[in-house]
Length: 97
Length: 385
Image (cartoon, rainbow over all chains, first blue to last red; front, side, top):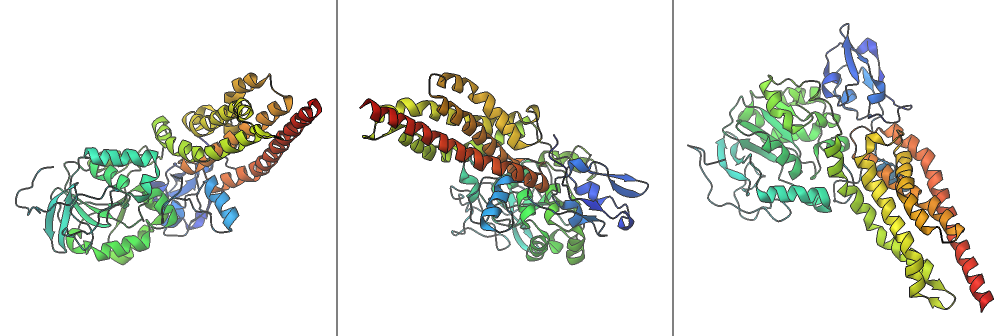
């Protein structure tokens, strides 16, 4: 299954990549591939902007504006003016995940 | 799991409270946190103090609790105490599997560790599952480091692997954890069910184990929690519809409320069914990438027979129904983006930018049409009088 992909924010600074393969290990959608000892973005349209790759890249080679792909969270943030976070958690309540 | 030889067995076994939360009500605590519960089978002694051993078999109560999580807000208060637990007879070199303190997540993990000697390190994720908690940062670097330190994991499993669920990766910086604790973080498979294969393969996950799929069963088990929140708003919708149709210059006429309102109430149910059940279940088969468009299409198809049934009614009402109900399905279907494993925030933002003005306009036009219908009805009534 594919989702709307036009605005995906994932970027790779190829010069910083050492080919350690950590991004391949943490990505839940097989976005990356190792080629010539370096990782490359092989399937950008599969990225869900979870931020796992950026968080675990020890060399700062990846950047992505991570966030929850959840309409309810985004509508909530429009109303409250806060960050979009899904409703589950903390003090209970919520319809997510 | 039966009694293990040579291990002290605690006789006092407390039942967990009905919500699954373990409360300190007199039981012996392990490592300052967990308390003996129905799913523990005693304790083992470690250099860091006693640690509860857990069963790898889910009881009927566990399964019932997990079922309730699928169909109600029971999941909002279904947690276990954070801390260290044991499976079998683990030692210094045994694997340490890290989990969230949402009991459903914890149960899914311990169920897969049957026959193993391992540790389970439960983080305080405020009762939230691993992936959502990783997104929020509660299943995160700071909490993991703190929990490793608090449980003195180095003295209990210092030579073991720290195996995290792959879906915890958005919240955890493996490098920082290693620097702070000395433990190398290994990301295990996405699904707990693959853990035995992951371990058997020498702690290597295949490409398939690393994929967050979203199959038919994944979608169908999530649908109750789409239907239930949508249906919570249904009584208000029903009240408004019955009031509008029953409203008359003479007061509220019950017969008119029922005869005029019932078809709309049925269409309301149909639009919930389309948006909250058909879209999740048939997700890959409904055209369009946009959930809003999928929902609109499903709603239009489902309410079509209802519109035919409305045909003896006013054209104004039919038009209002044609505008309102597919839009309602679309809005409900859009909420499902929060439950999938593949939607991204930039895509949802795009969807909302396009859909919200349509929703607001459609709702406003539907209300205007309904009011116009009522005014026309009353004018006829007054004229006849």
